[in-house]
Image (tube, rainbow, N blue to C red):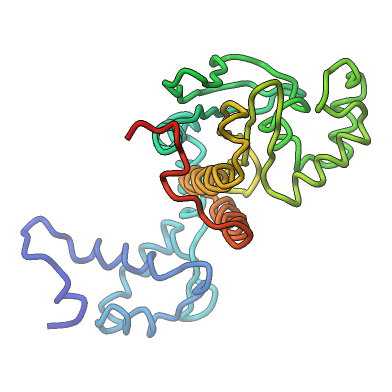
Length: 289
């Protein structure tokens, strides 16, 4: 019995050829971009002749691309179908259970927003059922430069795009800590981009926001944790909340196909934990566990 056959379950409905074809596709990744037929056969524990028809079929259907006499790489059909599926996933459906979990862990409100021109459009909120909470209704629009999520959504726009967006927008009509001019906003966004997250304080409340990315690595949305200033004024609590927020942003991004979002979240979470000790569960004194 070959190594490949040894892995097959005892089930009359199992299709060995299909199993081998899928295993072949799984062999390719970011590190292993090309494989020869001999190596493929060796990994499956079969002869080259046993997989010839499978390789031919996958190549004809566009799932593999023959780049040499006996060497293959993933074909465009894999990428096309994968991206089509990822693009079809509604970002609210992906984010909703993860934001609900984040709210349950922190007892703070969580929101999801996208950018429409110079405004943040709130698509979802995970309501925190506590007496002091910040809950912005779905459908609310707030100028991007005034909020943590809005600044995240602007943070990676090219300078030319930012100039065009704010060419006819007055910024000096908004109360502090909102920037009063386009150069001030651009400088602030540069710092936000470098940091990877935004902390924003307003009257009696504080919000921390991070980016959600799609399969291209582009920022497509932002999420936040928001609560009373009296709660998030505690440095240990802020540190713990930030780590949880970055982890959640990474999870949402990963489900949208982005490896970048998860890596960035992990990197920033590590930098926070290195500078401040991770707050234990008891540092959320308002929790009712």
